[in-house]
Amino acid sequence: MNKISNLAALNGVAEISGSGFAYVPTLNDENNSESGYQFCTIKSDHDFSGGEISFTVKLESPDTTVQLILNWGIFPLYVCFNDEHFAYSLKSYQNQINQLTPLTQTGSKSNIKVGVEYEIKISYKSNILRYYVNNVEMLYWNYNLNRAPISFNAFGSGAAHVSDITVRDDKPKAFVVMQFTEQFNELYENVIKPVCESIGLESIRADDMYTNGLIISDIIQSIQQASVIISDITPDNPNVYYEVGYAHAAGKHVILMCDRERQKLPFDLSGFRTIFYSNTISGKSKVEESLTKHLDSLYIR
Image 1 (cartoon, rainbow, N blue to C red):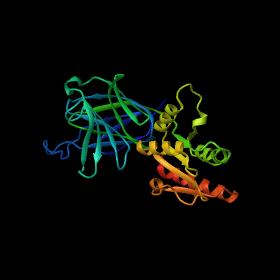
Image 2: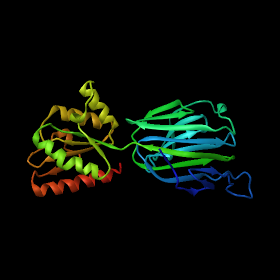
Image 3: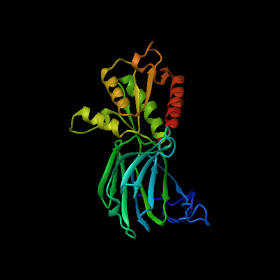
Image 4: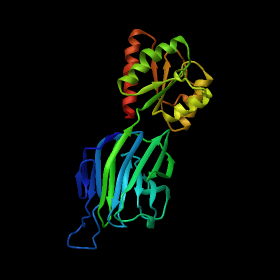
């Protein structure tokens, strides 16, 4: 577990202290008590894509809201404490209508007491985000998170104290889907696995699993838990196509690879970006470079 140590206010007023901050209510117009309060955003230097985030929060007014922001950027996810109508909610920002839209919400605001510390924990595994308060699960939602800085919003007429912001990061995984023959074993061991390791990804194939359960259950769980799926679709292998289809349906990032000797891709896959490679000495460095660029573009490390 790592404590967040670097925080900075982007707007509004906040007092930064150690691994936390205090939101300071500040009028938009100090000469007009009806002008409303400045919206405060605090950003950290810690990127998150999976694992756990925990912190404590204490409010000094029943109309103050604190939001943890994940997926910072185009599709941010807001984990809300003491929101407008509910005690706990998950919201997403919709660019089309320029506003936050509730995904799921629960709890009466009357249950949140001023001056009381609440322990918040957010867990994200296998595309499922779980929201705990005092170790009790309040909400969960299926969501595809991208790696982005952990940030907070705070607003309202009373102060809010957020402390002990702690993160346990899961190492992102790449699940590799391919036929198990010598040619593709060499591609995995000599190209895909070293490239993944070089950028901080743990690579795994179905033959790396040593469980007593059904292999298809292990494969589905691995796809769900992976940050990216890398698949070689050179031969017409029904198992490979099944797993690629499942990954696409699960909303996963999928990188396809194919030997240039194949003349034509199946129609359903022809529209996806594919790394074509040559099984030669010079082709090795080119496919390594291309795969690295594709993984870098996903920003999943």
